[in-house]
Length: 553
Image (tube, rainbow, N blue to C red):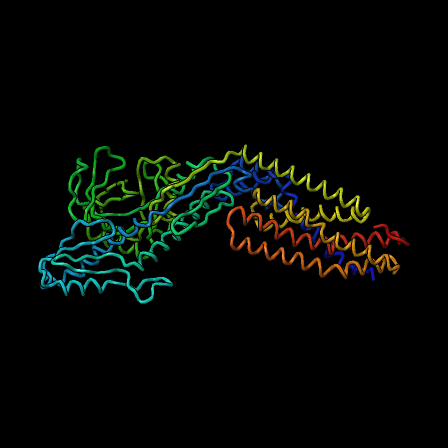
């Protein structure tokens, strides 16, 4: 009854060895982290002697996965940003104007001359020359409406068109505003994630909070201001026709135009058409480079549709200036010398190598659809993280010592077996966290401490049951067998219910709550494995060697 098949023993010890193998790199955290950083740097910028030496500090054949340290343990930056969703309404109306103008032009005999009027942000007002043609103008404008793309949009359209006198008014419908807000925040969330991933930070936390806010926590970054530089720039790149050039920033540009300053030429302003020919959304790639004079620049490439529009415009406007605008500043306004097919080009300016690299990252990750307002920002220094790690170590050591002392005094040799299984249990937790790339936070350490206390619970149930069976004088072998068999259901019930709670915490929680749920859930799985299989195998191996006539549990 005490037999455990050889293949089962091999599987048990194999799992233990595998867990220890993957947990081992965490004992050499600094060396392995330097190795991983060097490998990533070599992939991005090529090898050099320093990076190669750093990469060789850890053998390639050993695992290099580490338990990532969270913001509260490593230090880093914390931002709470609000997405200015109303910016999108204005951009939508600006983009709609050329489309509406082109649709009304064939109807001039009915509606007369058309002219855009000044209006509040998010509203498009167009004056028609013949008020009697308003019905036809409304019909044409409503023909531009599209169904709302959302789960709750129903049969509504994206724009509302009204007419009064000789003024046609267009604005977004309520359903489209709700859908647009959701799309804008989701898009901002994804672009922020891509921008942070591009610069190689470890395990950032990027989560939506409420309807229009985003929580960003990045461990290991120098400061909140550094993080804002990465994600705060909208990087709105547009290519716009130039109307004229001026030195007066207050000059009236006219309806449908705008005045923007030059980035390189002080005191120079450009009057541009508001509607761009192509935008950064048409880009498929952007890389740092150098121009023909060896100055830092950024090369770019459009997708098929953007390349076609770009090529058509340059073919039709040879000899005219063409402005490259980044975040409402004219980077350059070169004169189109010839047709530019293929959709490739280069952005030049007074860039440093670092600035051209960062601009390429921003363009490659995509433009933020709206501005971000930072409501909260904090920089958590590494010394605070070190204090948290030290406090976590003390908590774990105290928990270990108390539990191991209790088990040793209460159950003697069997308690020592349980303590060995407890050490294996914690190693397996770190091995699993390393394999899945999990992040350890201060609440996560609390989960491990709780697991240490719960891990011996299964052994206590088994050992107490063995004590009860010994009173029936069935012999030590039979008592051990029955102790494990009869305690199994109670062990599974207790741990399954706790595991369900951990899953619920992970699904509904965020940030620190998830960190606690992950370590608690993994700890439950490893503690059940060590209690049912590892401790039992240790007892069986001892029993096979000693063959005791009585047991002292």
